[in-house]
Length: 336
Image (tube, rainbow, N blue to C red; front, side, top):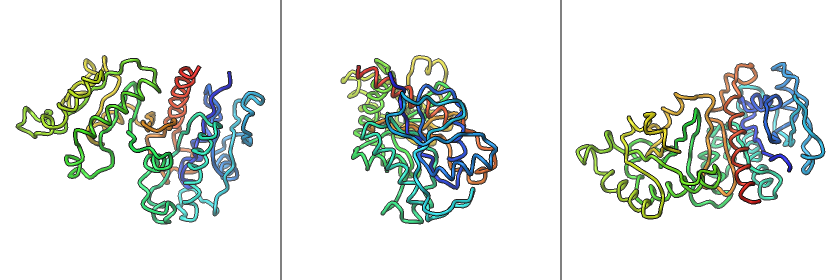
């Protein structure tokens, strides 16, 4: 059986994306990672970093015919719009970054790729350049719109822990208004379905946090638990979904609770992610749930100051590829 073929979008060309993509040539991976990006840029970075990488042009359908050797990397060449200098953003290349995503998505819809992995991009330069034709809020929203997916869920995984979010990039004062019973229910349903279908967990157990300190302390520290979260969990339980809580966010990450859980669902970004990033920063994986395809990403940004220096770590990207591979293998197993 052929190996899964994964599109790896190399991200912002002035950042560390091209640097860390080169390390895929030396990683032990049971898949074909195909780097989408400018071949000349990748060759230039390889020379700057002293990495002896052989860049091979990707040809669809060759996965079984031409095996890759250690130190070789397949590249689907997408030319830069303008020359690129490591560490220096250029608005002229903003559209190029989106073209990487468009090409990866198109390849998935055509059956060329089994999923996509994304290196970091720079939202600011894309917005400054007006490359998206409107406000660009990130990979996740862009891919959801492109695939006409109504709702997606952000989940980070690392060090044996999975943390998903009800709300993502919102100001803290807006979070309480955003957390509604229908939202909590729909997020849990998506999380439960993808843990089952893409991770092979037959009956996922999800720990759900409260919104307030001490999960509201019986209404003395807020009413969202009693009015929103507890009714949502009761509805989900009636559907056969094993979601328990609400747990205080400062105690939900205790080993005695996590040992029987498959994921934690936090109400907002900085409630759930600090613990995960402390446990395994640089090795974490950002996973978009709810999409009709596999998409994983790194847990860090473009690190412009590290581009071209050889100091950028590629652990998160390699883990993102491995996670996408595991998900692709699970989906293939179900399709047999």
